[in-house]
Image 1: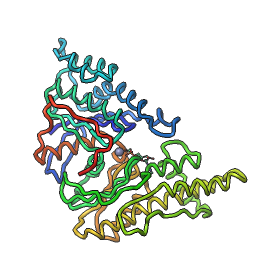
Image 2 (image 1 turned 45 degrees about the horizontal axis):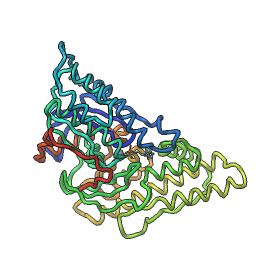
Image 3 (image 1 turned 90 degrees about the vertical axis):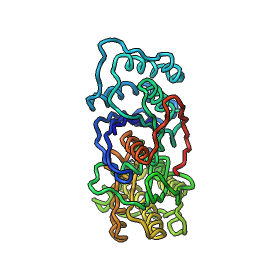
Image 4 (image 1 turned 60 degrees about the vertical axis):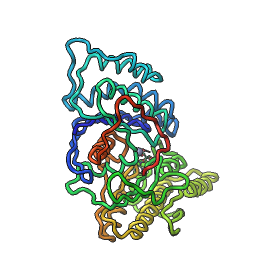
Length: 388
Ligand code: KG4
Ligand code: ZN
């Protein structure tokens, strides 16, 4: 099954063409094309994602990325004569995105319908203005090409990102630790398409904690990779230990997290120093190492608690932007060894937001009997869409 997948929930505009086969629990996916435009440099000066700017960038980049993904998949074919499309309808669907509408109308008029079977788009959770761009463009394509449309949960996408490129897929029932800029969740899944939220963060997400602590340390956005780099240097150079940060909620008998207190603790510790003198490079490195250790220890401890509470667990999946973190990977692998369970991660490329994972979930849904939405019906962006 060939699927054109679209992801615009945050600051990456990503369009992929995937070809999937196999059972719902063990999808095998070939990536035929993947075009991604990261807005990270656009948002960096603001120290976070700016929703209206994200929306504009998604709209601007949609048609060029679509052409690029289809071209990589060898599915782009120009038409000799102009193709009749319902221009009014495309423009009406993209009413709020006139720039995207013009580019999409032009693309649809000059290119033949590609040989794909369905379209998939992230419908939530995420930033609603950003989600709407992907949804409206997906609807315009589904109508023009008369294809079924799948509205996909972004967090289910992160879970299934761990299937791409695996020889032996993760087995169900599984426990997933989902760690991104907006979410920190422990989810149990007994079978594909069914999820139980065991615990989540009560305030900041793990990625957000990395980003905020990085800001305290005067490091650029996004902070996760920066903290990780300094922490590695601290380990390699055996930098002296000066800081002692808390491990929030580590010993509480639940599966929840809280990271805002950790950020405040780091803020006060750093402030105390800089009120008297400039902070040294070694102190910064130690702070990064200690913050990374604190976050990763709590994530691993709560995952362990979840696995121990559900002895039928067959595998552990760690996904989301923070799954790119080396220290977390090592700790989770060590945990897997202790518990005698395999641990799965997406490749680093698929840890952060991408459309490939959205395409995989659409395939899983199709295998579970979901025929997708009729192209004549409408999807709605849901910023706080829950995983269930
Ligand atoms: O999943 P993602 O790309 O977007 C959301 O859905 O939020 O995650 C982005 C988050 C950011 O907070 C970023 O700092 C964090 O993932 N991140 C990392 C690393 N790479 C990205 N955090 C820690 N270590 C990393 N190497
Ligand atoms: Zn994400």
